[in-house]
Image (cartoon, helix red, strand yellow):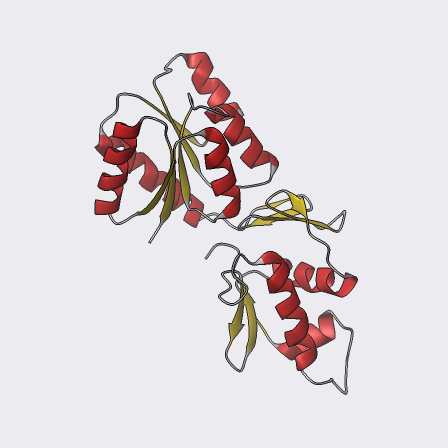
Length: 231
């Protein structure tokens, strides 16, 4: 089920869209101002954002620009009554993927959403130069820095190398022996696999929203681990 974040301050429209989208099988969370919407988008992983432009707090342009600054690559569909070409161009330049002018038919909104979701699902993990993004985490491989919700995360050298290996091998089943060889440098006489498990648990504690029920660094029973950038 695709998760949608609706950031819209017009209560009637927000309720109407939320009810219709839920009938279409989407899971929908709604925020009524830019500050709240930005915080929610950085805190949780969503498949698509429906973003009004004229919002209290921060406007939609500012929200979208801040999301892209944090390397959040979630598709953004802007909703607005401002139909001037300059507004559309500004929205696209701040990082929006599409732009729908109010009033609109819900059928057109659904079609545009489906197109954006198809495109996102067919795209490879977001790797921009040395930046890798997943969930609310940004990994800068060149600078060896990690941000979560925009705040620095302190990792040990071994934890960072383990994370580097995971993000470089997305959606692959990785055995504990492979990690011991590639990250720890062991070639023979491999130590107890708890070494890997302990470090993975520490990574989850620092990067996962719910370490006990991780979305990205998953355990494959009796096999090892799998890193899933986009669950």
